[in-house]
Amino acid sequence: MGDVVQMHFSTVDYVIFVVLLVASAGIGLYYAFSGGRQRTTQEFLLADRSMRCLPVSLSLLATFQSAVAILGAPSEIYTHGTQYWFLGCSYFLGLLIPAHIFIPVFYRLRLSSAYQYLELRFSKSVRICGTMTFIFQMVIYMGVVLYAPALALNAVTGFDLWGAVLAIGLVCTLYTALGGLKAVIWTDVFQTIVMFAGQLAVIIVGTHQAGGIAEVWRKAQNGSRISGLDLNPDPLERHTFWTLGVGGIFLMLALYGVNQAQVQRYLCSRTEKEAIMSCYAVFPCQQIVLTLGCLMGLVMYARYGEESPLDQGYVKSNDQMVLYFVMDVLRDLPGLPGLFVACLFSGALSTISSAFNSLATVTMEDLIKPHVRPMTEARATLLSKMLALAYGLVCLAMAYIASLMGSVLQAALSIFGMVGGPLLGLFCLGMFFPWANSTGALVGLASGLVMAFWIGIGSFVSRMSASVPPVINATVIPDVGNMTTAVMTTLITSKPRPSGVQALYSLSYMWYSAHNSATVVVVGLLVSFLTGPWKEKDLNPGTIYPVLGNLLFFLPERYREKLCCVTPLEDNSKGLDRQPYQMARKETNGVAYTKEEDKLREEEGEKNTTQPTCNLAHTLQETAL
Image (cartoon, rainbow, N blue to C red; front, side, top):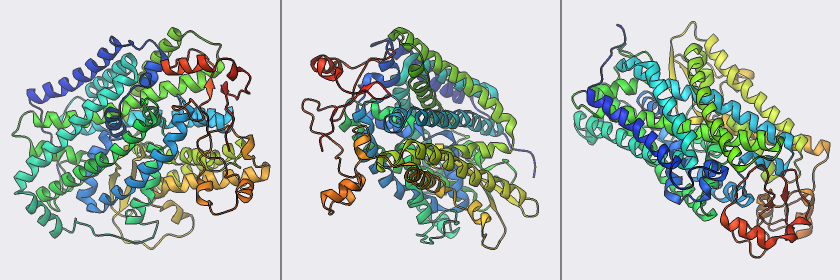
């Protein structure tokens, strides 16, 4: 085996790459100097709650379709076959549940940050813990998302590593800090189109060179790459229908249900109905993205067969294999390699810009506003922009740290998957179980995080320690919502079924989210019952989704009342069609309102001042039972 084979870009490829960066920066500048010019926190952080369904749905799709997934999915299919495609089965419930449970609760509470919900439901300390967990998760992940594709590009094409990192990082910081959420969403739309175009170009040219789609399919079948339905219920098996189709639901809920980057997009929609429709629209788009990744993997197999570029020594890792394939297939077509690289970095841009914006939002709403004296709207907006800029610089610093990590990079990549599950569990505990109290929430979150890191790090260490005798093939395991990407290692040896703690370490990464969120709920409920469960009448209206009431509809009302499952999701307040159980909020620290809300607040006037306030300075309406 020789050194890694390098191919080179043509001038046209460089031009296409630069056009992507200029267009993305241009969209940001346009929104910085047009419309409301990002002068209010409402416009900067929530796009004035004025976005329509289509751009929001494409932005939802782009947010977690990063370069790691674009590089990882085809190499997964090439190496292990099409079993991974069954992840698409999890999308149905994984998007239906957020659309009809999480979005109605978040949207009607008119929040800016998902973690405001935790204070309304539990307490300020739970909110701060949730926020800090999210910040830790995103900061660790940002650098990896930026560095990983740049490293692969550098290895295969010789494209300057830190030139790519700085160009992407600085452009992303520029348009996010200047143009706010509107710029992030519209650049996501543009970048989604580029992503589709880049992948389609490679698939079409590669299929043509392989002799047509029928030939690609024939070779894949002969090479046992077309997988059937594997109904093995063993949770230790890496990919089966159950791990992908059921375990994947919890991954999707962690991404599309409670992650601030996605919640922020729901909240910026014009109406609740449009927010729900945007979630529905993601479903077919996600299926297309997954299918494109699978097709590219099959075309790669049709071209190389069992003699992969990795085995031949042309590349050093699986994540470089897709780029090598692209450069190999498209080398006689100037411009198309540049289009794919633009597609690759569009994935990185969309993920990182969403991270900047969501981090700026939670830092402003959860950590600064509740703890400083009221500030003017202009000052609050300026501070939000400075936060987005600061997180941009943090991202570049994290990319540098990622470059020094070496093998620890694998652990860093799986951190998002570890932390996403406990956060999902925390929101489920609050939304579905009225008895849960704030002590239970805090202990449950801590238990979930301990369990997540115990399994995640234990699994990583046990694989590393077992790697001395056998041969190891490090495999990047992506998922379309790449924020839960885990990097696992597959031992090419036959070994007995693990037992005890080793069985826990061998749990399929697709079950991490389900296992960790269940830990939070179970521990949280146990601690709540031991420390005094809360009664439904003590809770803030609108913070509970009546899932138990719906499931136990056949019980008499007096029993359901004892079980805390009587309150409907909506109350009968008249004249508040946009906010059925809306809490009319005091204007604190420069929080802006839409015109309709201002009129509503004027009409309500004196009525609201006599009602009790909660920790968030929300005035609560009576819930109609």
